Length: 376
Image (cartoon, rainbow, N blue to C red; front, side):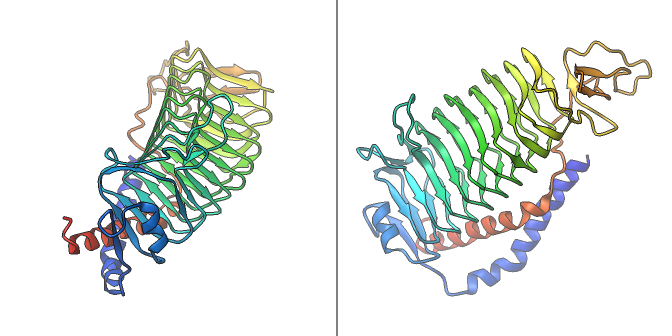
């Protein structure tokens, strides 16, 4: 229940802040709302004529173009299933590339930025390079080399996107830190659902559905302080979670089911805390190489393992003997019953609250502008 109360407090804080300050934002001199195709026939033309802080509202339709964003603005599609940006004949371009802070993108399908699946060029539905405090939410990314590719970019929110049938789903690279990946549906990538690589510290992955990829979540090459909470990670044909050179991190409240390997700890991944996870019907629950020691319980409760054969003679819901993973890893307090991950575990709410406030204010401002132009 503690996790549920934390979420309620977080949402209440957002609401109070919005109510307190939204009026202040709305009385300031308002940037423009540009409508495509009414004001300009293409999205790229609208971006070229936009000023800092403008909103570009794009009506339903398929737009065959690629976009370069070099100013802070909001790009909003009318309907994510029918407002489509397709690279068309621009076969070596990203759908959207942003090199600017404070960019918001929502309500689009972004597709076909794809080279050969065997030799991907790194084309993306959305590419962020040195772009911070951006919000990428409520989009569909399909048939790209990368659904969302984040390089050297921090303090971004990637939320409620449907990312399917790409070569890779979401990738964070090269010192991309303090990003939040939340409530995305990430299915059927050829390779990784989510991959963090090269010193991507202090990132949070929470509440995502990650199914039918090669690896569900991967963290490679020396990253610290990664939080993986409340995800459903299922039916990935290699590892549900693959960790290499990860330290000082926590994996809490995840359903890890029907994978070839539930969690694969590879190459000096240690000082990691795992608890309140469900390990169900994985061919191998945990594979470690080498056998570095990690904490598989929080000192009171551990994880649920469907192949645990111990007993609970005092009926406290915790097995009387440890669950042995290898000689250096064991769960001292294995749970007798699966955890309800609907009770979202507690995570550092101060890391997400400021960005949620900003994104909520953006929606208020944009909807007000659209109403004024008679679209709602």
